[in-house]
Length: 271
Image 1 (cartoon, rainbow, N blue to C red):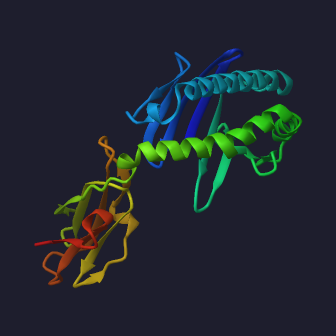
Image 2 (cartoon, rainbow, N blue to C red):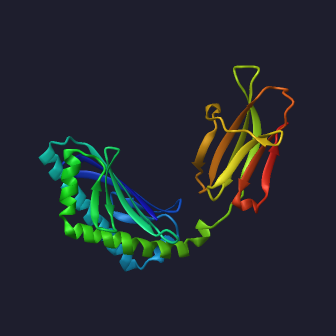
Image 3 (cartoon, rainbow, N blue to C red):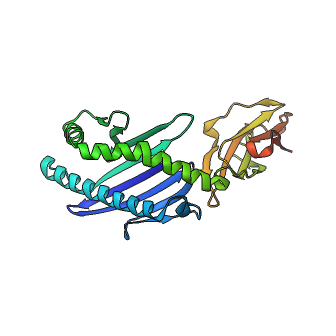
């Protein structure tokens, strides 16, 4: 379970926060900056926790944002910081087999500090006056450390287990990839690019490779292969490209390996 938060501090007393909670790679809930409430993005999210728990989480997050804004305003006055400022946080937990939880914060796009729920302490990732000031302030705030420790060690894992149970169908679904191969001309007439486009698959783990005469061709990042990208329907797509000389006499096959194929390879020959 991961929560992404981005807070923009536009001027003293004026801030804007967006947030997104993901279960694996499934968008489960979002933070509504105008209503200051949680919006559920999947039908199984709300029933996973008791209504009172959602109310408590909304109250907790609103209190956290209020305290964060107060701290930023104080620091801005004390350190002569200039607005606007952006603070981003990455919070989450994993359960078995490697139980773990974390809180990481960035300031102006750079790693700033993190919180360890194991010992209840804050660690700075920059060695400057601002980072030292914030670290000291937070390490002297026992109430905040206790709250964060409970959220990360208790609330997050408990919520993760409940959400995973009700969201099992979404999280464990298998969607087979669709693939097509085609050629693309280049300014050099002695060179042709073969493109293998694979889309519509879930989960995201996939292996796509070109075979020349049955042997895998090492990927060449300069040819315009596309990295893994999400589709709007909660599936993924990518593209692999290989260069060839027209009429070179070799055979070319795009091979797709994905868990939904039941151990089979999807093979698409060119030509």
